Amino acid sequence: VASLGIRPENIALCDADAGQINGSVAVCEYLGSEQFAYIDCGFDEMVTVRVAPDEAVPVGSVVGLSFDREKLYTFDGDGA
Image 1 (cartoon, rainbow, N blue to C red):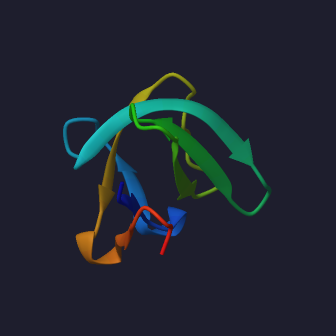
Image 2: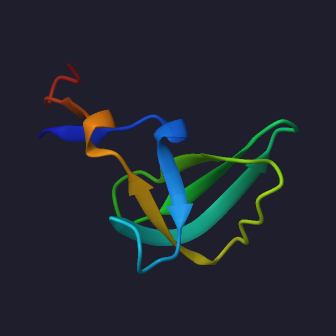
């Protein structure tokens, strides 16, 4: 089974109807100079997005995820 990957800094939050995919904010982790939002898009794992520390990302809100397809990585079933 192949999988896709993308770095958290290469994903932007947007309105739910404007993203390539959307999901629900499950957790926000504030780390001082940055924060990470963990988005449940219905995949096996949550999608991690790096967000500005002053951006409001309410848990439970539905958001869109926007990204440049050229920043995607593909992995085969062995993780390579």
